[in-house]
Length: 325
Ligand code: SAM
Image 1 (cartoon, rainbow, N blue to C red):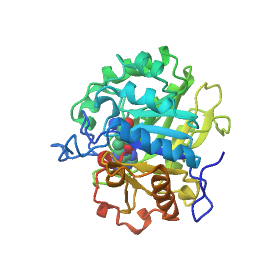
Image 2 (cartoon, protein in one colour):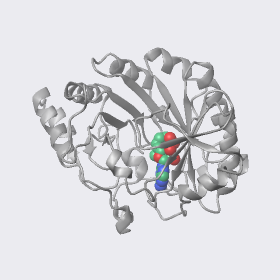
Image 3 (cartoon, helix red, strand yellow):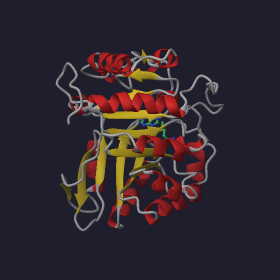
């Protein structure tokens, strides 16, 4: 079953759910040092409400769900939600994006609950720099989390690296070398200028640089749900992906996703301001048919492109942590 088509013929089969706006890190490109005003518990969707949304989405043909945040693992009893979602008919893949700091002691519970895949965000392999970029975290915790995830059987574990000029662009080869290891896939993301804090590095430049290690062959054997374009270094077990929201003209043409914010709003585009409120109808006992109608309305309002080229990204009112990156 394919997901519903948007007005530009894209099949929308993927929903990213931000389960909390809270995060235990304050990454320089994502949040101000003091954090952002937190939503109250009553503002954010309960697990039962999230389940109802996913149920409606699944009935429409959405079959892939990713949990994100904020930091999903700071929300209490996350495995409980995973178990609830994994039982919904039609959901074929249930994955999570995490900063990895709390992963180590949770991998088994997550796996047993039905989580299929984990992506870990990691922008540096240097402890001091990690503290600088995240303002609060310890690199050791993330590396142990990645190892624990692999041991628990998550495969692949993908590492997402936001590349910032002058901050971590000297570590590209170190990250690329990690793909020689079993089951390690690295994806480089162009920094989106939410806060204008760091310059992005175009992926063409990264590809050229990684070429110092060997030839990068296009790779089609790994597909994600997302917009990454994959390559493999000769002899490497893992792949190198590039996510190019800023420099790839066709980036949005492959968009297959919608986002659900912690406070229950569906966002057709990460970088647009449009949102459709699902929380109010949910709390007014809306029927499944009504929820499905609202989800289809959001899909019908997906823009053809984001507005990054227009240089007005800074007008996006929510922070990445409040949307769910
Ligand atoms: N806390 C989780 C994590 O760190 O993966 C999930 C939420 S985080 C907002 C999701 C992803 O968005 C991370 O990979 C993060 O690096 C990325 N991200 C945040 N701000 C970004 C920006 N300005 N440009 C590009 N990626 C960004």
